[in-house]
Image 1: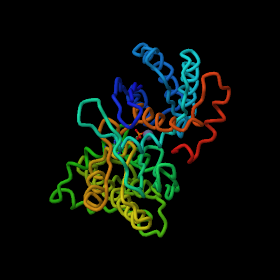
Image 2 (image 1 turned 180 degrees about the vertical axis):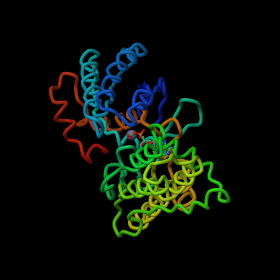
Image 3 (image 1 turned 45 degrees about the vertical axis):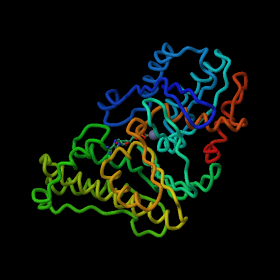
Length: 342
Ligand code: KG4
Ligand code: ZN
C-alpha cells in the first residue's frame, strides 16, 4: 500500500509505503501459491484502509496485470469498490510499467522523490519472478518489447535452482548470500561450469530452463543421484557459477540491445536487480557509457509506490482514467498489452 502526494508534475511525497510481505506464508510451499496469495490480499487490504483518510484521495491506481489472476482480481474489485464509495476515479496500471518507473525515483530528502528524466532512446531490462524482458523506449509514449524469455523467467530460475539445493523461497537472495562466500582458492577446485544460454544468439531473447536443467543434472551427478546432501562449499560453488552465468547473459543481451538501437539510457527494474552480482555487472559494463538508472533498494521488489507513480503518469492521459460509475473496468484492463506504458 502506498499513499502519494504529487505537485502535479514529477515530484512526489511518499506519505505511506508499506509492503505486506507474504514470504512467510509461501515459504512453506517453496513458491507462490495463487490461492494463498489471494487470501492474504483479502486479509491485508482492509487493514491498510484504516491508515487512509479518504478525503485526501484524488485517484486510485490498481495493478491489473501481469500477475496471478486470483490475487489481481482481489485487488481490482477492492479498488473498484473503493472508487465507488469514495467517488474518486481509478486508473488500471501495468505491473511492469511500475518496475520501469521504480528505477527513475531519486531522492535528496527522506520521502521526497522526483522522477529522473530519461535520455531517449532508452532500453529497460525487466527481471522478476515472472518476467525477463527488454523494452525499447523510443519516446515517453513509444514502448516496444524487443526481447523476452522463451521459457522461464530469470527470477524463476533462481527460485527453482535454490529449491533443488534445499534453500528456502525466495531463492534469489539465498543464492546471492551463498555466492558472496565464494573464495577462488577454496571453491574453484569443484570445477563447476554452467551454460550461458542463448548468449551468442542473434536475437534479444532469453532462455533459462536449460540452465535450470543443467543445475539439476549437476546436483544429481555430485550427489550420486541424490543419495547424499550437497556440502555448503558445493552450494557456494554452484550459486556463484549460477549468478555468473545469469549476469553474463543479461549483460551481453543488454549490450546487444544498446548497440542495435543506439540507446542512450538503461533502466532496470524487478526483484532480481536486488542481486549484487547483476547490479555490479550492469554498472561496470554500462555505468560509464550510458545513463544508467537502477532502483533504490526500497523499490526493487514488488511495492505499491511504483504502481502509484506509473498510475499517476498514465492518468495524465484522460482516456486511461475510469470514472467510479463506469461499468467497464474489464474493458479498460483489456486494453492492456503495450499501450499501458503510455
Ligand atoms: O519483482 P518481484 O518482487 O516479484 C515479481 O513480480 O515476480 O521479483 C521477485 C523475484 C524472485 O524470483 C526472487 O528470487 C528475486 O526476485 N530476487 C532476487 C534477489 N532478491 C529477490 N534474485 C536474485 N538476487 C536477489 N538478491
Ligand atoms: Zn514484480
